[in-house]
Amino acid sequence: MMRVADKLIEQHCLTKAEYLELLKFWQDSDVAKRLSEEAVRLRKEYYGDKVFTRGLIEFTNYCRNNCYYCGIHRDNNNITRYRLTCDEIMECCRAGYELGYRTFVLQGGEDPYYTDEKMCEIIRSIKKDFSDCALTLSIGEKSYESYRLFREAGADRYLLRHETADCSLYSSLHPDEMKLETRIQCLYNLKSLGYQVGAGFMVGAPGQTLEHLAEDLAFLQELRPQMVGIGPFIPHHDTIYADEKAGSVELTLFLLSIIRIMLPKVMLPATTALGTMDPLGREKGLQYGANVVMPNLSPVKNRKMYELYDNKICTGEEAAECRGCLGRRVMSAGYRLVEERGDALE
Ligand code: 5AD
Ligand code: FES
Image (cartoon, helix red, strand yellow):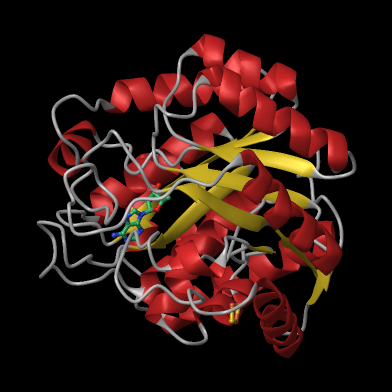
């Protein structure tokens, strides 16, 4: 039916030109079906019907960066900024642990208030009280030395989406002081320090073409991260992209299948952005190769303040409600939530 689809399935890798050829079929339901079946087969082969959870703690919405697409960019004066104390973070972890979470993700803007010393203190407290849990950081670009200190303090994983592997698209989405090269260097630094690393990108970011996405796939193939986070771009009303259209759910699902086939053992979340664009987006994500969900563990009072994009879901619920709700959703898709760290195989 489709030479490049077959080649991906047989060899788990393609050239950039072949990825582009394949991506042109994203609206072809036969191709999408063939890829999703293989993606689900692979994810079942390695991870069975398990869905891993990560308790997301959005601990600061202060940010020194001005990414054009992001609702919490520095110059947005229309949002209320907050920071969680170490005690508040520990409280989120405690509640999360009771609910069965065995991975915590500390995510925040690039907030200089949290010096390396403060971060290490937080990392150490979490790893001391929850020694059977994995700790993931998602706090942006830092020096090799900072990453080394965090790792030494006990951090296991790091999420840093590359956003786009194309230099000029990267420049059009970010202010001049941000460089793709720096971002990529950070990812390789993290890898060399022994972190399980997560990269990723937005689907349908303003100006993005299928060529750009082919470049992203080729980049992931080269980096071989343990985790990949992708979700549709969703406009935020306080950004220059307020009137842009959101990324496509179908294209995101198509990409999830390709990524699962390219990196069969990868940890691949069905993201909140996917659930925001489609009420059944996360369930669909699981049916196209995703095997992770990342519910919110942040204090309810802060959730609405961490709006990277408009209409973000689960900003009004308690942690317990999200766990229960997601458990049911995952069951309805034929999978089950597990109480495990969920490290990537190999
Ligand atoms: N729409 C979708 N995703 C977004 N992110 C930031 N802003 C948006 C938006 N408007 C994503 C980025 C970032 C991650 C934390 O959230 O990819 O890396
Ligand atoms: Fe949060 Fe459904 S996952 S309410």
